[in-house]
Image (cartoon, rainbow, N blue to C red; front, side, top):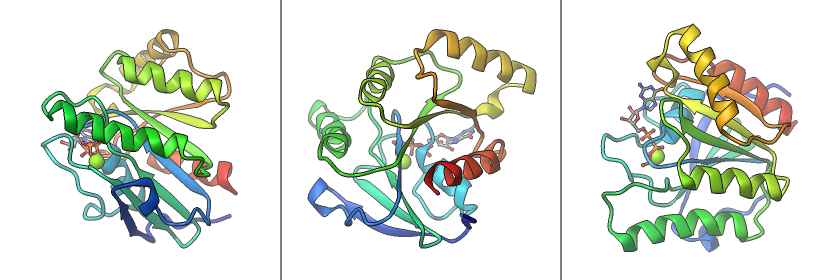
Length: 196
Ligand SMILES: Nc1nc2c(ncn2[C@@H]2O[C@H](COP(=O)(O)OP(=O)(O)OP(=O)(O)O)[C@@H](O)[C@H]2O)c(=O)[nH]1
Ligand SMILES: [Mg+2]
């Protein structure tokens, strides 16, 4: 099915699982640590810089933010985890909202798990990958900020990371740059293929 990602609009903001819209269409979930580039990726996919809030101050996305793409699918932008400068209470609140998204029984179709291509695995990343592997959750690994490497450097880094992480053998691995629009079209097509 053709999906026009440029037709993406804000759909809902949920500060708790109860506030999430009814799961009545295919849903893609973005997970990953704070500042990894989740909101930026949504903007890149939609080709609209004003859609999702991007900030220099990590920890901006404090609720689950839903976007609707072309009336055909939903994207859920989860609060990022692991940002050190928010209080312990805030941290627990963000991550419990992200956790409860997964444990609530809400139906979703695909997780895009984002990780900064320059960084080594955090314990939250490892835990998330293990969680998805053991629950047979379909996911893509999306390495962000690929513009920080040359093309060859990026290829080598992705190989290195594949050795470091324990990815599901069926998981697709992408390297993208929201800034330079690298790998964005491939990701759009891969999402559409999994969902429809
Ligand atoms: N160089 C580079 N910087 C990026 C890219 N994508 C995002 N950034 C920067 O990374 C920072 C965080 O981006 P966000 O999209 O707000 O990250 P987030 O994952 O939504 O963060 P939270 O909402 O805190 O969970 C911003 O300063 C972005 O400009 C990219 O592709 N390349
Ligand atoms: Mg965000």
